[in-house]
Amino acid sequence: MADIFDVVADPTRRDILGVLLDRETSEPDSGGEISVGEIVTALGVSQPTVSKHLKVLRESGLVGVREEGQHRYYHLDRAPLERLEDWLIPFVTTDAAADAVTLAGADADAEEALNDDQRAFASALGKAFADTARQVTAVVGAKRRR
Image (tube, rainbow, N blue to C red; front, top):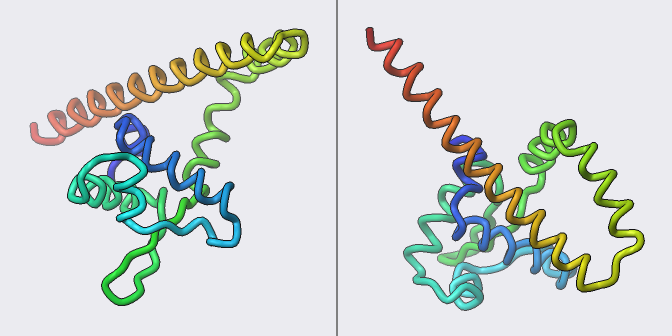
């Protein structure tokens, strides 16, 4: 199974997770489920691409699937992300408290810019962790082969 940092480092997979989250929050009666075709339409990418990324997300436990005949309906599984969040909190708690104070007096434009900064930081952090995980895996694999 791929490391969660490797999984979320891919922008297409993050986009798919975003679509699943949107479905979950905007249509609570749907159980957060969405078909592959709807994801393809939402993202404007090919069905094989979406299916490939959904397989990785499913294998990592980030999405669940319900099969109905030949159709598959996917939904977000928050458990792995909650474990990741629990691990990350100690690293960002100090900054988060400072950000909350800054936001308290900021207008909507400043808040939107800060959210963009936070997204960029999270993306960079995810990529750095994924790169580190790959390097550690390579070193450990090399040591085991000796």
